[in-house]
Amino acid sequence: MQRTLAVSTILLVLMPWAAIAQQVDMAAIQKWSNVKVVRYKVDARFDAWTQVASGKGGESAEGKVTDSYALEFDWDAKGRKLAGSVSIKNGKSLVAETRDKGECAKPVLKGEYEHFEATEAKIANRDLLELKGTRSYPAAQIANECPASKALNAVAADYKAVTESIAVPDPKMMSLAGMGHTGNPKVTFSPDKQSFIMKMDNGWTVVYTPTVVK
Image: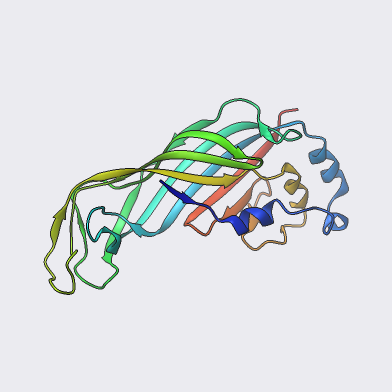
């Protein structure tokens, strides 16, 4: 199982408010501070070079991969816990091109690579949502004996369990929308200021759109 988590980014997202409160729209602070339950729509997109083949030497076989998933859930802002189930919708992975990290022959994929297929979501601890799922590698031809040999050799298809984790931000972050920034360069607002965007260190960019339930 692989856990990928940009801890520093998440900690900054959940930062205390005292240092910036005086710069924020106080009406917005009051609105978001009084929220009991908020509904989050989350759109996550992956865009990075990553390993796309398994087996011996598979770590050198990389692809330029895009992937996505979407979540929707209600969040108890005071209790900092889920207020119901999490809806999960998985997108399809696409591999635009491949390369060998050792500058040998490019890997040839014989099927579809699926970067992350989420199957379950739960709270790992306060403010952290843990997504469990799978990663699927296709059969492939890779240069797994390079540089001794430049020949491409067959490796079998494979899959493994994967865990991704994302922060569940304090909805009071929306109080900063009028300022247009959060103080953290990895967390920004959408142009319409209805969502905030977290850029992770693992290739994922996560867009959170909160609405007040009560």
